[in-house]
Length: 341
Image (cartoon, helix red, strand yellow):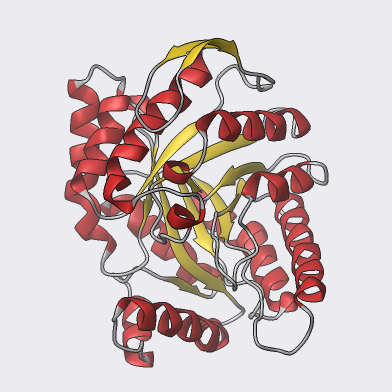
């Protein structure tokens, strides 16, 4: 199983310090984190697209390109690219360029996005939420297959054989479909034969098994080989020397983020009891000492019928940088060997 990290490149707001100063510091820290993840043997680092004050990663490809120039082995991916509000041609070109810089280590995870700020920002109507994604995914897959594309759609000007360059270093640029809890999204990934990344940020992981089975069944019915129907998990996690320390270190920052988002979406404030329940054996969070986190990863692998990759979203920025570096080090040197021994 591959083990990795996802980041939205969260930063601290409301400190009175200039935003530019905070941004420079946070990007410097991010690149240090990716470099360390590469050195300690982690498999993948993902940067997720957001267009909000507290996140710097509005353009994951640029941050990943900087990381590509400073790393040697780790795979670099979006987590996710909000394809519905982007231009597939530009997405392909950006990640093909990252692939060239990294000598073949780039990937794209595409999705519709759980945040909607990018839609009005780039002039798209949320009424076309699913239609936009389906159309643009179709174009992105064609761009991967052909240099010169004949394509016609509703929400983007047609292509009449124009060439799209550069081409990536890899023969086929990996594209994953990122999904939450919508069965139709699982079925779509299966029918297309695309690898799947499932975001499990709450509840009990075993409850996702029917939808993952739906994905695999849809893929087999569409004629795709079983080995191509690959499942990865994106979850929330943190590692420290003891489980109690890990839980106490992460709680203030996670509760702050979830309470802020919950206020926008009409959710009740998050509580320590609910947080602790998610840390339980059957909960969604990967929080604890290395043995606890490795055990949870093995459990998730078993109840979901086999997963190829687990990436943990770490709350960098508000969380002290030294603690981030420590958890990255432990994921690579202790958790990963325990999972794969």
